[in-house]
Image 1 (cartoon, rainbow, N blue to C red):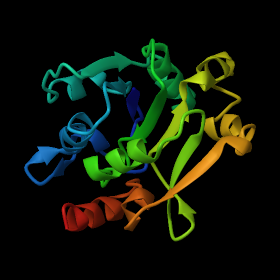
Image 2 (cartoon, helix red, strand yellow):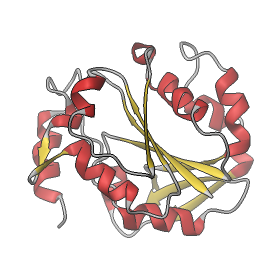
Image 3 (cartoon, rainbow, N blue to C red):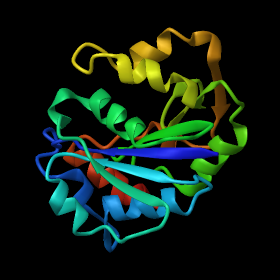
Length: 195
């Protein structure tokens, strides 16, 4: 049983507008991403909100697989949002961690990750040797992650301690590398979406 955490707590400082509420097609970025995550083989999706959480909640439809949580310490960087998500997952074999910035991730990518996951490994998608998102981590790392200081630690720091657990899965395209930080990225994403 693999559960998902989708991180959408940041302030979108570089974009200048709140990224989850930008539109892609006829819906917002967060609605579009949630449709992909919720229609995948993930057994549950924990959406971690923070900045302007109430505004984002207004566009999200209820779903039995979806749990909304709010990271009140979202200013403490992304690691605190990962911790918030993990605190709200009681039991799982592993957890897929995705970013709302990576809006080209679709259910096919998520399902390929789930199919290729082997118990106890850290699964990282690659495209032509470059690492991307989302990743899957074993649930056994939960306590170590929750015990770390969000001001002094990143998820990368934790994962570097466990390189012997790394496993890679090669993807067919570069969607896993796309990260939407700027207005230029947003325009490129609109052009690439569903191509």
